[in-house]
Length: 333
Length: 260
Image 1 (cartoon, rainbow over the protein chains, first blue to last red):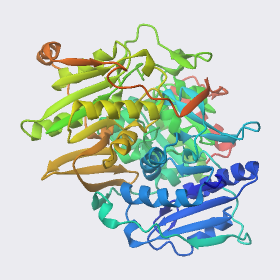
Image 2 (spheres, rainbow over the protein chains, first blue to last red):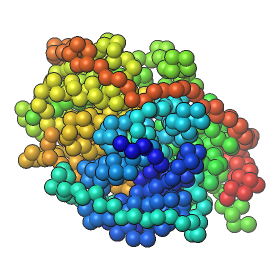
Image 3 (cartoon, rainbow over the protein chains, first blue to last red):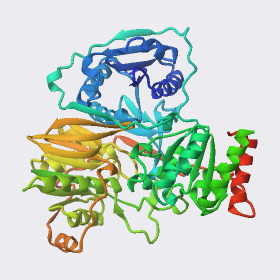
Image 4 (cartoon, rainbow over the protein chains, first blue to last red):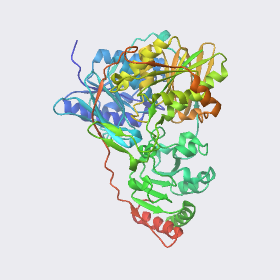
């Protein structure tokens, strides 16, 4: 058997473009490949992949495998795992990385078990041990209260990375790389399950994960109304989006697609304002990448102040209207 | 139909970060004082999902399966009190250092030993190590399809119709049985264990298996270290004579910092 070599990242597409996680995977993949003195490959799987392979080269890949077939239009576990299993067995990478997305968290473990190797999901740091040359995989555990570092000796070494935890490289259109079509020759009749329907729950305004300003409310908001009034007003004025911690979503005050946290959206805006939320580790896992964190909470001991840059201890019902009024006045000037 | 739900006992995940302690030598979390162990929250959602299928399909049996120490019996009893029918407990010191690979392997063997089953339910991830892969692993080892992070499941004509959560909505997937699903909290509030249910659970059968019944499996991943990240607490608190004044001063300060 040939030696395992190189880093392979499993890119993702979103609405006909490269998803941002693909750039993040290429960024960390490039670093790992360079520290091993090996190549970085990417695989793009879908239907109508088109010119995206060249974009992956511009973002750091030496080689891009394209698996382009109507069979892969929708994500189906069996089809994707089967295709990637064939690619990995044929190319023998040392390391395989995926994104911790709806796709990656489904695909990663299933592929890892099929290949008989240990996967680590939701990593926030990856590095090569200079002595053993093994990949050290660091991930939050206990809802983000602690970090654990894992290492596995089986090949390929596998991990998924948390969205927005790694930096993409600047796009360099002059980079050269090889683009290669790959046909996994899957038997479609072996794919169990079919996609019946996809239901989009539309959010008005800016998408939470793209917003430069995020206004987030917690259990202390007391009910659904403040999310639609005072938080929505503030978001509108600052050109941002409204999110929530898990309790308001579980209580049905806010649709779950607005949930920020370990099992919701991961956000990293320029400005995050957290209101009437304690800062559970579940929630912190979804927002501590924010550049500037502001908190308003009654309880001065709340965890959220431990990660905040600016804070006001007080009842949001009194603090927030005055804050919004002053913001409006300053913006108008 | 035969359904199996995998559950795990964990430290109460609501334990505030300030009282969360670890033993870095042993690479373990230290149990918080006076906080009882609980069923991992997504596993409780998994029990709820199984019971919903049972409610809609007469003659369905739900087996609650857990691997853990002696006290794992409590979470099995919790599942039985909610409405499960039988329990299987896997306890052996040889299982103690299991990673996700070993755990999934041991659970998959136990599931085979329990007998033919139509749907296996797991939580989408457990609240202690947050590994999020035991469910998919079991499915792969058993060679059956899996659908992860679901919020709804219905069974008809030998297939399961499930709603899988996506960042911008959900998708409806149809898969043939047997299937493994991992369940998210969006399935809805888990039912309460009623007094009647708790009393009934005391009489329900719980089978104990050790590594003699289901062999232990070596871990694939090794934990090198466990540590608590250092957070720089450097919050600038804005104060005022009144909460309103503090609010207005916060706006001024953020403007100065050019944050809006």
